[in-house]
Image (tube, rainbow over all chains, first blue to last red; front, side, top):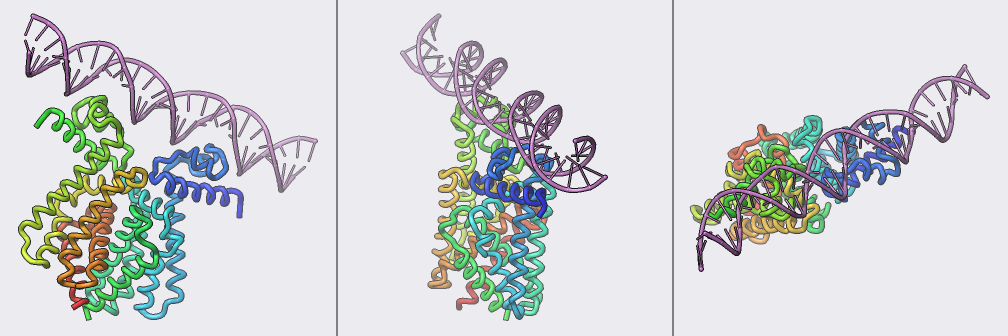
Length: 190
Length: 190
DNA sequence: TCAGTGATTGATTAACTGGTCAATCAGGAA
DNA sequence: TTCCTGATTGACCAGTTAATCAATCACTGA
């Protein structure tokens, strides 16, 4: 791993942590750099400006999630199992933790003023949606679109509720909640 | 209406609008005051500091929502109708619009650093939850808690999705989506 | 008339922050 | 050695902003 790659990663992780601790995008480049053990000037050297550092942090979080999804799907056999895997991956500790969710919440705020941030979140939602639809279709037929909309929406909603009250929800209970919703949706169609 | 009450309301509404336009809490008191047609010093005179202005804005938004819910429930007869009214009220134009939702999203961010903001959102969630449970119990029995969790979560999730892409969703489609989820949940139990 | 009270503001300040830049440093190639 | 390139930084600046404050202004009750 080159020095540049390492520094970039360290800064990106520091940014996520700092956003997580502060709970907002109102973090200073200096604080981020200090957390990464370098000077703020180096952050500018590598990322150009603050927003590009934020966007890199976003890509990092979404990539972690995508990796989790891929890993989970690899071991799943059959449509129902794949749906379960998809839901399970959404509440894995690497995503469903304080820092990741605080950052994720703030990325929605960033998306209000950054088209690139909006695009990234959009890609995430579309991918989840099409994954859901793909395995829902054989089980629910024409209702797959609407069901996917509801399951996806519920997942996002639980993220939001976790952001407000991390103690009131954990990965397992959230997974169980969504799995039940899935079963009820499928049951209602058949 | 006293001058003080009028000014406070004007400033609160200006704050919500400004947050809506900027899409973040990174708004200046001066801009808010200018939007309200007064000087920034007056905002400090009435609210003491920026955070207390934000909290007042939050209370305002949540009160608008509560009013909508009360109005909607007043005309509903029977458990199922009350559930429909509850869901319908959540997607009324006065709540489910660009400015309100942008503000609402940022209140979740505010809650990351303000206990009072956290408490206010907590009250909102609890009230929705207990409202749902109250009318769900006769229809779903012991599952009422879990179903309410899912319906409430879905509503929040749709708010979030609207924040990202206001064009992809409107009040009617969102209402229909949640109503279908409700029907499927009830159907699955009976 | 006049004193008192709350509304209102322009001016000011102290602190902070994004971003720049010239200057050093370390290591490899020639 | 000498040169070059990328890593790294401390110092610095220009702009912004929350909060303060002394000073008006408008009105009311005695």
